[in-house]
Image (tube, rainbow, N blue to C red):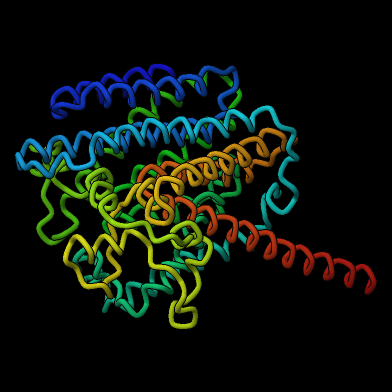
Length: 453
């Protein structure tokens, strides 16, 4: 893991030296500061005790670093004076925000916190429960294909137009909850030997990658593979097997990155899919909106703060239908789309605002300070509860890997990260209730059978 920190820091510094003009010193301060924090969390005997922090700051250094690189590249291409608008301030705010995110995490490491209770620290659920959740998740995808007019229409529909807008809220909520089935089946893929359920889990794992790729998600290959190898690594105690897993992980990492580029660059026209996009992959990715958080933040800082808590509370009210709850705030990503990208306000298309942009839009720089501290406390609370959960079940490690994967999204947008946190905990509670129901029915049946005999 330490080699990873060194490698990614060198790559980002090299890219910054090539593309960033005038602000390379501040960029280097940000990269080296974040790398030092990441090194601090990696420099432990048991990486499991800091794994959430490692994911958070890995996403923070990679995504934000590439965001600054993209901004520098775009400035070189346009040579426009406004390309550097607010940039000095943004570098300072990002350096300060990195420290603000780190401080409550460090503070929480010394606190006595109770571990997760049985609702979260569950045993593997009944096989019927696993079957039901897998089929429900696949069923939602099949229903989406049906609404699109069939497989052919679904595959070749343009990115963002595979589902009718009237059904988007439905699929965003229920598919968003159901996709957490991936973390439920990780123990099945790695440990269970019963052939029927393992085969179904493998089918679902492959199905989720295929559907994500068709939907145009650039992380549809990378994230499932990362989840699988992370879970296996965290639940393996043999050092030799861990070394082998690291080698396989590097291979999976390369496959995920290459696959992500192919999906990202072809998703606007699946019918003419081409591998030629890899020829100029770096420039094409920098030209795209994949790492546009810094560019969008420059524009957000020109807006006046709203003096509200709209973006802050959005992840916790996201599931509410706007038609019934008209006070529900609009997320910053969509505000960017119609304020700065000249898109229709009714379109469900968003751009990454960065967590700093979201917190600033609510309460200015005071909101940034409060928001970063809040997120740091939440992350520290979650990791320390995990550290103090004795006899952690393998299913709990599956769920926690899900938290880790979702935490990397934070570098792009706070709302996207915490919406997924909320949906994961809804899913955990749903599994608990279903499992209780299945076991209660089985227990009642056994009692009746005993009485009859």
